[in-house]
Length: 300
Image (cartoon, rainbow, N blue to C red):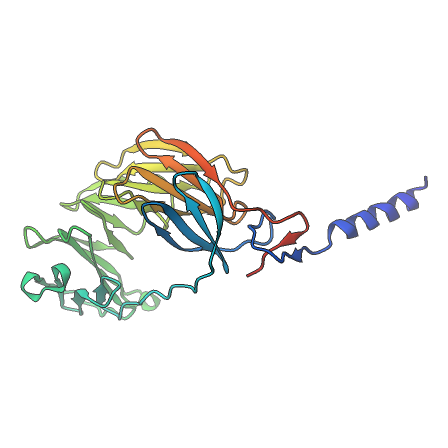
């Protein structure tokens, strides 16, 4: 066979393999490199974990660890807090702040409010954002200066039990943990605002495990789930997720008691649910909806 014939055959084969996938008529999860949908709106109850990939929705039976198609449901539109306001997501104001004052209220009860005055030289041109932990024992404020003209941004930390400000430093963000703070998404501080370590992996989608001090992270470099104690900065365990693409994405859904973690994959592992036992650091089950047939996919 001549070189020209071989090239023609290779071109035909390449063109055939490059044919775009067709839309599947039935609900399925994608297993191709270029088409994937984000996991949305997970709901965990006593018997099931319900979630959607795009317009397709699924239900994981917690007793049998099987996934079946579920009725479609609209996307949940989360309420966005107004500038300088923190709510419980249902309309109750938990904290409010301006350029000189911040107030934290437990459950929206005015009699429970702890208020603090502060003074920062530059204006918060790019916004003010208060935060508070679920225990209502610690509060924080992100104060964003005008970075375009070199004005600094600050974070402030407050102990609501002792009714005092415990820290202030130049930084771009602060999140309140169960018994500490996370600054700039990287550095852990204890309740007294003393540095205890760094987050074990750069993951903005970390999830607290129940009411414990453990958080779950996804290390996209190593392909591992990381359980880290935010009170000490120590890593409790690392769990290899086993997906070929180490940097694939996951939505974490912990049980309320923090004993189990469900990791729902998307991108190259769309819709698969990994069940992890937190105490042992073991993946106990892998459950997936029906994958799309070769040559087909779901777009919406």
